[in-house]
Image (tube, rainbow, N blue to C red; front, side):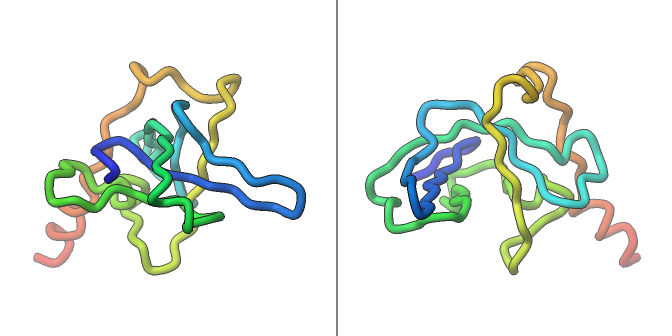
Length: 112
């Protein structure tokens, strides 16, 4: 369902239930070591994903070119906490997004 550069986020609280939809958002994780660890993505709404709540759903199709979790400080999906912000006041414009750090290449070089 999700395409390259898209995420799905549904937030459920005691008083609210909403889906981020048709909005740019920034995704990052702590530690954010490199300017490229902060990724600008599009939050989209697919009803097929509504059973997920209070998590970030990343694309995982073979056709997806980018591994968004890995682009965020080399993150993976084994319990890492990702942060999503859609506040336009503090988000950098998408055209100023820094290229992702190639953590996979750095790790491979360290193993040599």
